[in-house]
Amino acid sequence: MKKRILSILMSLCMLITLIPITVLAEGESVVKIGETEYETLASAISVVKQETPTTITLLKSFTASSFEIPSNTNITLDLNGYTLDLGEGKYGVELNSGSTFTLTDSGNGGVLKFRGTSGSNRTAIYSSGSSQTINIQGGTVEMTSAGTNAFYAVKATGPLNISGGTVKASGLDSIYKKPIAIGAQSSSLVITGGTIIAEGSPKSDGSYAAGIGIEFKNASSCTVSIADSVHFSCTMNDIDAQNQITVTGGVFNNIDLTGTSGSSFTKSTINGTVDLNNNECTFTNVI
Image 1 (cartoon, rainbow, N blue to C red):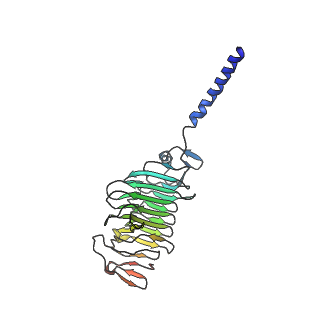
Image 2: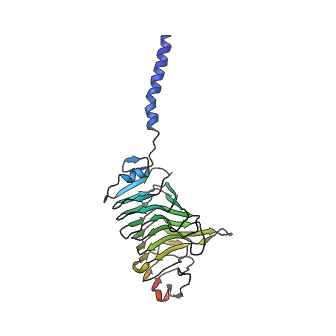
Image 3: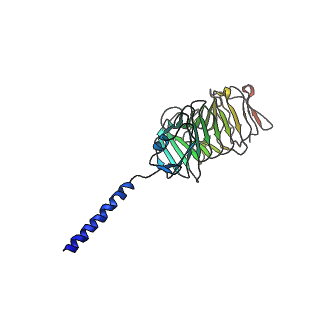
């Protein structure tokens, strides 16, 4: 009898020692900074110090709320081959004053997803000031919307640099309310690599209605440089050209230059150059 009681007590002791391990295993890390892991993206962002370049790396695919890049911080988000779904709303990632946001992917197939709600100017990655910089170096920015207003994958008032990855807007087709991959507003836009895709609603033949590759708004101080290696799968529409904009490369499908007011600019083609007459807007080496 004593041996049986002793055996039961030893079994209970073994079970008790396992309890703390089970409790500790309940929290699961989703991102890391260096070797320190965090259970939420928000908690990782909260420890980033101003003026200190910091890389936040995904450890798994997960869904999170949209977030802001705090003022005067420099944050790189490494998708690491995983998918970050930011749900739906007005902005997915919103930069604040003096901040820099860089998207990269050290893995393969990383995606940042966002879905716009009803309303105008819904954007996956958004900057509203000249002191805010967006860098797209890898991964895919995937923006969708079922609303009836124009929406953007990336919209920038400050510098926007794209050197790799894919910027894609899709899911709507309506006149002047098309998916827009890139919105450049009084900004410096430099594209040296990557793929730009803007797709409207699917057609009966399986293809997609064209979206807008780049929309220039308030472009009096906008400077643009696009390298030959960049591929566009979209049209170039809704260009509000107030001053000189020069595109020096890129492969463009279905060139369609349309004024935002609905009236088409007169177009002329000379040796591969499309000129918008008196608007001083020139597309060079367009194929």
